[in-house]
Structures are given as structure tokens and as C-alpha cells.
Length: 258
Length: 320
Image (cartoon, rainbow over all chains, first blue to last red; front, side, top):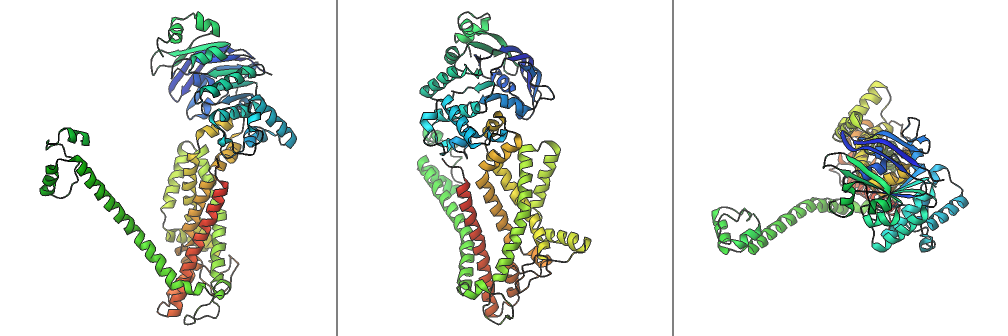
């Protein structure tokens, strides 16, 4: 179910501005890969290119190759909607659909893709909410608005919504940065459980978090503001945090800049 | 120059730039002598309050006046059953009372047809402009809508006359008037819907895209759904705008005192035209009373539609 992502010579642009340059990396299946680096280094941008969300922004443009196993995500014949069905995403701020109930939020990605049967829907909604560790908290109020939940619950609702469509890969863009430590812990535990089924890529500003949840870590950096961001190195998380190959990685990890 | 600076240097004559420009040197000197910035702020506060309250009353006076005039002069006829059930057939200007049902039905029917045509066009245009429009075409459409919203109603009416009657050789009718009203309603619906769609956070669109939901489903299920109550309000603004329009009716839909439910008939009863009809015989107390009553009826209709729309918007709005 989970798949590998291969990125080759990726350049990402916002209009004329080159935001990211020459990124080549591999994301292993059934593992957690963390993208870390200072603000503006392009880690979120790279994340968004992995499921073609980058091109939603006006002027967004991508060069290079992104392969999901043997499928080229940027091939002319590839439909971005299909890509996003296969590669789900969780955003920085919890964004449940405000007009929908908890149930409808989880079912939001299923109904337009042809899952209409009530029983099937019920089953997927329950298993997704269980998968996001939210089921026991909301099972008695599935018809209540999703926006009425707390921030941490909303974020888990968003994760439930993302895994309901059974993607191969789950992208997380700073999923805990708007949450308190308890909710963060809940999400981190969840990430640990999810990686047995999904390939997970997570962007985080929190290096302890990267160290806690990820198997591999990619460090991004940029020479100066206005310059494109680059991938400095990607390696096993223990190695990046204990014995990185690059000096700038060590400086960043040890808090000398960033 | 900040008040803090004034406090530190209370004697500095160059400081009080922000004292109220109340007249010439004398008032300014008097203020300087106080050497008290708090006092100066208090005076400014009072001045601002007085100005705001005056403006508020200036704005509210005509409104209250109109309502009072219309209600006091027109309420009497509205209390009679016949007003709500009958029409004006065989009622001469010097006869009292009669019914307004023909005009009420006519106005509602005409506005309903107008809305049925204008609302989809307006909403689809707004969706295009906000969700899809890029580049020159979108700019051109936006510019056109701006121009359209500035078109006087008489020009819209004459345009429809030129197309409907002169070019196509069709006869004047309630439907032709409705077409002119469509031209007036579209820009109101487009602009208000556009504003509402822009208020829908981009995060929600991205959330839907990230689930593999196609763009058009996202627009229908997420964007339009979230903006629903705002769009209803915009539609109501449009309805209120066209309901009292008179110029297109004068040119395209001649009045009749009879019931007329066929929008394509040569004559069509509407409330503004009923008001206009009785205004012609204003010297007669009977006609004048009818005129005020018809005006009050029109105001009540607009008010009722607003309330209905608000109820719909309330039940369709985002709840926590």
C-alpha cells in the first residue's frame, strides 16, 4: 500500500522567483521522513510539490521529476486530482470544513470519489476516526459540526479525513505548530502508528519533534534571503542529529543559527 | 506629534500640532494656556462625538420621515380585506380604496422571473471571477460588471426596448421589463457574491484539493456552501434594488388595473406603476391615499423578503 517517492533535480518557482533548487531525495515507504530547516528554505514548498498542491498557487511552477514508485507525477497524462487522492495532506492549521458535521468531514473526500453506500461510508468513517485516535471522543456526536472540536481534535479530524481516502502517502505540513504539548503528543503517537500503513513526510520547525518521530531527516538551507533553498543532506535521523556530514547541518541542529 | 511628547514638554509652543483646529489664534492660545494634553484630548473626543451623532441624525431623519409619512397616510387601506384580495377594475380615481392584489402578484411574479434569470448568471460570473478567472478575460468581465452596475435604469430599459421591440419586433410586456431588471440585478449579485467567495479561506479549498476532490466539486460543496448565507444576502440586495425600479416598467410594461398573470401580455400590473398611476390624480384624496397605501405595501414586501432571506441565511450559515 505505501509507496516510495523519488525526487530528481527538482526546481520550484513562484512566478519568476526560484524558491527551491536542485533537490534530489528518496522517501522510503512505511517510514517517517522529516524535512527541517530555517524559515524560507523551501521545505514546505518541496512538500507541496509532492502531491502537486504547489501548482494551485498562481504562478506556481515545477521543473524536474517526482516518481511515485514507477509513476511520474508530473507526466502530461497524470491528473493532479488522482495524484492528490494517492498522496494526502495535513495542513499547518486545522482546517475542517466549517459547514460540515464531523461525519461529513471525514466522508468529504469519499463521496465525490464514488463511495455513496451508507454502510461502507459508516465503516470507513469509523475506521478512519479510530485510526486518528478520535473515535472515542466523538462517536456520540458525529452529526455535530467539526468546527466545534478543540484545536487538537480538529487536527486529528483532519488526519482522519486524509486517511479516509486511503492514500499511499501522507504529507504533513507542520501539523503540530498550532497545538499545545498534549495535543502534539497525541499527534506524534498517531504518526508512529500510521507509519506502519503509510509513507509519511512531515515538515517541522521543531527539531525535537523531528528527532522523536522521524526515521530519516532532510535538512534544507538557503545561502541568503532571496536565494533559492537547497537540500543540504538527507540521512537517518540518528545520524543527522548525532553525526551529520555537513557543517551547516551541525550548526543548525546545535542551535548556532536558524 | 504625539500626546506623550506634549506631556514631556508642556510649554513647547511647537508641540500642539494635533490640537483641534478650532478657529483662529485665540482659541489656540487658550488651549495652550491650559497646558493640559488630557484636556485637549477630551475636547477632541467631544467634538468627534458631536460630529458623529449629528451625521447619524442627519442620516436617520429622512428615513424616519419617509416611514412616518408612508405609514400614517397609507396604513388605513391596508387594514381593509379588499386591498389584499381585489384589484382596481372599475375603480375610478375618485373612488376610494379598491384592491392591490393584482399589483402585488405582478411585482412578485416579475421579480421572481428576474431573479431566476439574474441569480444563476450572477453567481456563475462571480464563481468564474474568483475561482477560475485569470488574465485578460477576467479583467474584461470585471470591468464590464463595473460598467453595468453604473448603468442608469432608464438606459437598461431603453436598451431592452431597442432589442426587444425595435429589433425583434416583439411587443412590450412584463417579461421585457423583467429583462431590463435582469440587467440591473446581475451586477449587484456578481459583486456581492464575489466578495463573499473571497472571504472563504483558501485553506478550505486546499483541504478539499488535498483529498483528491475535483475543483468543481470543491467549488460547489465547499466554497459556495461556506459562502451560502452571504450569497443569499447579496441576492436579496439585488431583489430589493429591482423591486422598486420604475423606469423599465414605464417604458416596457404599461400598467393595467386588472389581474394579469401572463408576463407576455401587453399590459402588466406592478406596485411601482400603481403608485405612478395614482400619483397622476394626486389632487384627489382617494387616489392619494391609494398611492401611499401602494407605497407602504411595496416597502412591506421588500421587508418581508429581507426577513425570509435572513431566516434562510441563518439556517444555512456556519454553526459552531
